[in-house]
Amino acid sequence: MNEIKIGSFAHKELFSRSFMESHQQIEPEDLMWPKLDGLALERLQQIPFWEEALNTELEAGAKIDAYLPMISDPLLQDAIALMGREEAAHGRLFKYMIEHYNIEVPGHAPAQPSTNVEQAFIDFGYGECLDAFLGFGLFKIARQSGFLPEPMFNIFERLLQDETRHIVFFVNWVAYLLSSRGQGATLFRSPYSLWHYGRAVQRIMGVVGRSAEHNGGSDFSATEASVFLEGFSLEKLISNCLQENARRMSVFDSRLLQPQLLPSLAQVALSGIRLLPKRQPQATKQNLSKAENS
Ligand SMILES: [Fe+2]
Ligand SMILES: [Fe+2]
Image (tube, rainbow, N blue to C red):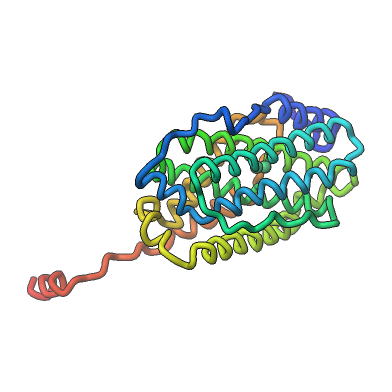
Protein backbone atom coordinates (compact mmCIF):
# COMPACT_ATOMS: atom_id res chain seq x y z
CA MET A 1 0.00 0.00 0.00
CA ASN A 2 1.18 3.53 -0.72
CA GLU A 3 2.90 5.41 2.07
CA ILE A 4 1.14 8.47 3.34
CA LYS A 5 2.81 11.65 4.55
CA ILE A 6 1.98 12.17 8.22
CA GLY A 7 0.45 15.62 8.64
CA SER A 8 -0.73 15.83 5.03
CA PHE A 9 -4.27 16.48 3.80
CA ALA A 10 -4.45 12.83 2.68
CA HIS A 11 -3.41 11.70 6.17
CA LYS A 12 -6.15 13.78 7.79
CA GLU A 13 -8.75 12.43 5.33
CA LEU A 14 -7.66 8.85 5.96
CA PHE A 15 -7.62 8.89 9.77
CA SER A 16 -10.82 10.93 10.05
CA ARG A 17 -12.87 9.09 7.44
CA SER A 18 -11.78 5.60 8.49
CA PHE A 19 -12.72 6.50 12.07
CA MET A 20 -16.15 7.78 11.07
CA GLU A 21 -16.86 4.92 8.65
CA SER A 22 -16.11 2.29 11.30
CA HIS A 23 -18.61 3.77 13.76
CA GLN A 24 -21.21 1.36 15.11
CA GLN A 25 -24.02 2.73 17.18
CA ILE A 26 -24.33 1.35 20.72
CA GLU A 27 -27.77 1.59 22.32
CA PRO A 28 -27.56 0.18 25.87
CA GLU A 29 -31.23 -0.83 25.91
CA ASP A 30 -30.79 -2.96 22.77
CA LEU A 31 -27.78 -4.97 23.98
CA MET A 32 -28.12 -8.62 24.99
CA TRP A 33 -27.80 -8.18 28.75
CA PRO A 34 -27.73 -11.63 30.34
CA LYS A 35 -29.87 -12.58 33.30
CA LEU A 36 -27.42 -12.84 36.19
CA ASP A 37 -27.95 -14.32 39.59
CA GLY A 38 -25.99 -16.01 42.34
CA LEU A 39 -22.22 -15.88 42.06
CA ALA A 40 -22.11 -14.14 38.65
CA LEU A 41 -24.28 -11.29 39.90
CA GLU A 42 -22.27 -11.01 43.11
CA ARG A 43 -19.02 -10.82 41.16
CA LEU A 44 -20.31 -8.11 38.86
CA GLN A 45 -21.66 -6.12 41.82
CA GLN A 46 -18.40 -6.39 43.77
CA ILE A 47 -16.15 -5.05 41.03
CA PRO A 48 -15.08 -1.79 42.68
CA PHE A 49 -14.61 0.52 39.70
CA TRP A 50 -17.96 0.83 37.92
CA GLU A 51 -18.54 4.37 39.08
CA GLU A 52 -15.03 5.36 37.97
CA ALA A 53 -15.77 3.80 34.59
CA LEU A 54 -19.07 5.70 34.34
CA ASN A 55 -17.51 9.01 35.40
CA THR A 56 -14.53 8.56 33.06
CA GLU A 57 -16.94 8.24 30.13
CA LEU A 58 -19.07 11.21 31.25
CA GLU A 59 -15.95 13.34 31.80
CA ALA A 60 -14.64 12.30 28.37
CA GLY A 61 -17.86 13.47 26.74
CA ALA A 62 -17.64 16.81 28.60
CA LYS A 63 -13.95 17.34 27.65
CA ILE A 64 -14.75 16.70 24.00
CA ASP A 65 -17.78 19.01 24.05
CA ALA A 66 -15.62 21.75 25.61
CA TYR A 67 -12.90 21.31 22.97
CA LEU A 68 -15.17 21.12 19.89
CA PRO A 69 -15.68 24.89 19.39
CA MET A 70 -11.89 25.35 19.18
CA ILE A 71 -11.56 23.01 16.18
CA SER A 72 -11.71 24.99 12.97
CA ASP A 73 -11.35 22.09 10.51
CA PRO A 74 -14.89 20.79 9.74
CA LEU A 75 -13.78 17.20 9.09
CA LEU A 76 -11.80 16.99 12.35
CA GLN A 77 -14.66 18.63 14.15
CA ASP A 78 -17.11 16.02 12.79
CA ALA A 79 -14.79 13.15 13.73
CA ILE A 80 -14.15 14.44 17.27
CA ALA A 81 -17.85 15.19 17.75
CA LEU A 82 -18.56 11.57 16.82
CA MET A 83 -16.00 10.44 19.41
CA GLY A 84 -17.88 12.58 21.95
CA ARG A 85 -21.18 10.88 21.03
CA GLU A 86 -19.53 7.49 21.41
CA GLU A 87 -18.20 8.40 24.87
CA ALA A 88 -21.68 9.59 25.83
CA ALA A 89 -23.09 6.22 24.66
CA HIS A 90 -20.47 4.42 26.77
CA GLY A 91 -21.57 6.52 29.75
CA ARG A 92 -25.21 5.53 29.13
CA LEU A 93 -24.12 1.90 28.89
CA PHE A 94 -22.44 1.94 32.32
CA LYS A 95 -25.38 3.82 33.82
CA TYR A 96 -27.79 1.27 32.38
CA MET A 97 -25.66 -1.63 33.67
CA ILE A 98 -25.37 -0.13 37.18
CA GLU A 99 -29.15 0.26 37.38
CA HIS A 100 -30.03 -3.01 35.65
CA TYR A 101 -27.91 -5.13 37.99
CA ASN A 102 -28.48 -3.05 41.13
CA ILE A 103 -24.82 -2.22 41.56
CA GLU A 104 -24.14 -0.01 44.57
CA VAL A 105 -21.94 2.99 43.78
CA PRO A 106 -20.70 5.67 46.17
CA GLY A 107 -22.37 8.53 44.25
CA HIS A 108 -19.43 10.77 43.29
CA ALA A 109 -20.25 13.26 40.57
CA PRO A 110 -17.99 13.41 37.49
CA ALA A 111 -15.21 16.04 37.65
CA GLN A 112 -15.70 19.36 35.88
CA PRO A 113 -13.64 19.78 32.69
CA SER A 114 -10.45 21.83 33.05
CA THR A 115 -10.32 25.30 31.52
CA ASN A 116 -7.31 24.38 29.36
CA VAL A 117 -9.50 22.46 26.98
CA GLU A 118 -6.90 21.40 24.41
CA GLN A 119 -4.48 20.18 27.09
CA ALA A 120 -7.36 18.31 28.74
CA PHE A 121 -8.23 16.62 25.45
CA ILE A 122 -4.60 15.63 24.83
CA ASP A 123 -4.26 14.26 28.38
CA PHE A 124 -7.50 12.38 27.88
CA GLY A 125 -6.19 10.85 24.63
CA TYR A 126 -2.96 9.62 26.23
CA GLY A 127 -5.00 8.32 29.17
CA GLU A 128 -7.12 6.32 26.73
CA CYS A 129 -3.99 4.85 25.13
CA LEU A 130 -2.82 3.62 28.52
CA ASP A 131 -6.26 2.38 29.64
CA ALA A 132 -6.84 0.57 26.36
CA PHE A 133 -3.41 -1.12 26.34
CA LEU A 134 -3.89 -2.40 29.91
CA GLY A 135 -7.55 -3.15 29.19
CA PHE A 136 -6.62 -5.39 26.22
CA GLY A 137 -4.62 -7.75 28.45
CA LEU A 138 -6.90 -7.62 31.50
CA PHE A 139 -9.96 -8.24 29.33
CA LYS A 140 -8.39 -11.30 27.71
CA ILE A 141 -7.29 -12.77 31.06
CA ALA A 142 -10.69 -12.09 32.67
CA ARG A 143 -12.53 -13.58 29.70
CA GLN A 144 -10.37 -16.71 29.67
CA SER A 145 -10.88 -17.19 33.41
CA GLY A 146 -14.68 -17.14 32.93
CA PHE A 147 -14.91 -14.53 35.69
CA LEU A 148 -18.26 -13.37 34.28
CA PRO A 149 -20.62 -15.06 31.78
CA GLU A 150 -19.56 -14.70 28.15
CA PRO A 151 -22.49 -12.41 27.13
CA MET A 152 -21.10 -9.74 29.51
CA PHE A 153 -17.74 -9.93 27.75
CA ASN A 154 -19.51 -9.60 24.38
CA ILE A 155 -20.92 -6.29 25.59
CA PHE A 156 -17.58 -5.01 26.95
CA GLU A 157 -15.96 -6.10 23.68
CA ARG A 158 -18.07 -3.47 21.89
CA LEU A 159 -16.62 -0.80 24.20
CA LEU A 160 -13.08 -2.03 23.71
CA GLN A 161 -13.49 -1.93 19.93
CA ASP A 162 -14.58 1.70 20.19
CA GLU A 163 -11.68 2.55 22.48
CA THR A 164 -9.25 0.93 20.03
CA ARG A 165 -10.63 3.15 17.24
CA HIS A 166 -10.35 6.15 19.55
CA ILE A 167 -6.66 5.63 20.32
CA VAL A 168 -5.75 5.06 16.67
CA PHE A 169 -7.63 8.23 15.75
CA PHE A 170 -5.97 10.07 18.64
CA VAL A 171 -2.33 9.22 17.82
CA ASN A 172 -2.92 10.23 14.20
CA TRP A 173 -4.71 13.42 15.21
CA VAL A 174 -1.90 14.43 17.62
CA ALA A 175 0.69 13.80 14.89
CA TYR A 176 -1.38 15.81 12.43
CA LEU A 177 -1.90 18.65 14.93
CA LEU A 178 1.79 18.95 15.83
CA SER A 179 2.82 18.64 12.22
CA SER A 180 0.41 21.40 11.16
CA ARG A 181 2.03 23.60 13.84
CA GLY A 182 5.52 22.79 12.59
CA GLN A 183 6.19 20.64 15.67
CA GLY A 184 6.02 17.26 13.95
CA ALA A 185 9.44 16.24 15.21
CA THR A 186 8.34 16.82 18.82
CA LEU A 187 5.99 13.88 18.67
CA PHE A 188 8.67 11.43 17.71
CA ARG A 189 10.85 12.38 20.66
CA SER A 190 9.86 10.00 23.40
CA PRO A 191 9.89 12.63 26.21
CA TYR A 192 6.77 14.24 24.72
CA SER A 193 4.78 11.01 24.93
CA LEU A 194 6.48 9.90 28.14
CA TRP A 195 5.50 13.11 29.89
CA HIS A 196 1.88 12.62 28.86
CA TYR A 197 1.92 8.96 29.82
CA GLY A 198 3.35 9.98 33.21
CA ARG A 199 0.25 12.10 33.76
CA ALA A 200 -1.93 9.19 32.62
CA VAL A 201 -0.23 6.85 35.10
CA GLN A 202 -0.82 9.37 37.91
CA ARG A 203 -4.49 9.43 37.00
CA ILE A 204 -4.77 5.64 36.92
CA MET A 205 -3.09 5.37 40.34
CA GLY A 206 -5.75 7.76 41.64
CA VAL A 207 -8.46 5.47 40.21
CA VAL A 208 -6.91 2.40 41.86
CA GLY A 209 -6.68 4.27 45.19
CA ARG A 210 -10.30 5.43 45.03
CA SER A 211 -11.54 1.96 44.03
CA ALA A 212 -9.72 0.40 47.00
CA GLU A 213 -11.20 3.07 49.27
CA HIS A 214 -14.71 2.44 47.98
CA ASN A 215 -14.20 -1.23 48.62
CA GLY A 216 -13.19 -0.52 52.21
CA GLY A 217 -9.76 -1.98 51.41
CA SER A 218 -11.51 -5.33 51.63
CA ASP A 219 -12.17 -8.55 50.13
CA PHE A 220 -12.49 -8.15 46.41
CA SER A 221 -9.01 -9.29 45.57
CA ALA A 222 -8.98 -11.88 48.31
CA THR A 223 -12.22 -13.60 47.40
CA GLU A 224 -14.13 -12.90 44.23
CA ALA A 225 -11.12 -11.94 42.21
CA SER A 226 -9.25 -15.11 43.11
CA VAL A 227 -10.64 -16.84 40.00
CA PHE A 228 -9.37 -14.00 37.91
CA LEU A 229 -6.08 -13.75 39.78
CA GLU A 230 -5.28 -17.46 39.63
CA GLY A 231 -1.93 -17.79 37.88
CA PHE A 232 -1.81 -14.01 37.46
CA SER A 233 1.65 -12.53 37.03
CA LEU A 234 3.11 -9.35 35.62
CA GLU A 235 4.67 -11.39 32.82
CA LYS A 236 1.29 -12.88 31.89
CA LEU A 237 -0.39 -9.46 31.96
CA ILE A 238 2.25 -7.75 29.81
CA SER A 239 2.44 -10.56 27.28
CA ASN A 240 -1.37 -10.59 26.96
CA CYS A 241 -1.41 -6.80 26.55
CA LEU A 242 1.18 -7.06 23.78
CA GLN A 243 -0.51 -9.94 21.96
CA GLU A 244 -3.92 -8.35 22.13
CA ASN A 245 -2.57 -4.97 21.11
CA ALA A 246 -0.97 -6.54 18.01
CA ARG A 247 -4.14 -8.48 17.15
CA ARG A 248 -6.46 -5.50 17.58
CA MET A 249 -4.16 -3.13 15.70
CA SER A 250 -3.81 -5.52 12.76
CA VAL A 251 -7.28 -4.57 11.44
CA PHE A 252 -6.37 -0.92 10.86
CA ASP A 253 -5.07 0.55 7.62
CA SER A 254 -1.32 0.02 7.74
CA ARG A 255 -0.72 3.60 6.53
CA LEU A 256 -2.08 4.94 9.83
CA LEU A 257 0.08 5.52 12.88
CA GLN A 258 -0.53 3.27 15.86
CA PRO A 259 0.40 3.80 19.52
CA GLN A 260 4.07 2.80 19.66
CA LEU A 261 5.67 3.89 22.89
CA LEU A 262 3.70 1.75 25.34
CA PRO A 263 4.05 -1.50 23.36
CA SER A 264 7.82 -0.80 23.00
CA LEU A 265 8.24 -0.14 26.73
CA ALA A 266 6.14 -3.20 27.53
CA GLN A 267 8.30 -5.33 25.23
CA VAL A 268 11.46 -4.13 27.01
CA ALA A 269 9.85 -4.82 30.40
CA LEU A 270 8.78 -8.29 29.29
CA SER A 271 12.27 -9.16 28.05
CA GLY A 272 13.67 -7.94 31.39
CA ILE A 273 11.19 -10.01 33.41
CA ARG A 274 12.00 -13.10 31.35
CA LEU A 275 15.70 -12.67 32.14
CA LEU A 276 15.02 -12.68 35.87
CA PRO A 277 15.58 -16.02 37.62
CA LYS A 278 12.24 -17.72 38.21
CA ARG A 279 11.29 -17.97 41.88
CA GLN A 280 11.66 -21.55 43.07
CA PRO A 281 8.90 -23.11 45.15
CA GLN A 282 9.90 -23.02 48.81
CA ALA A 283 11.77 -26.10 49.92
CA THR A 284 9.87 -28.12 52.48
CA LYS A 285 11.58 -29.79 55.47
CA GLN A 286 10.73 -33.17 53.93
CA ASN A 287 12.40 -32.33 50.63
CA LEU A 288 15.44 -30.95 52.43
CA SER A 289 15.91 -34.08 54.50
CA LYS A 290 15.47 -36.26 51.37
CA ALA A 291 18.19 -34.19 49.68
CA GLU A 292 20.48 -34.49 52.71
CA ASN A 293 20.06 -38.29 52.86
CA SER A 294 20.70 -38.87 49.17
FE1 LIG B 1 -15.25 5.42 26.16
FE1 LIG C 1 -12.72 6.59 24.21
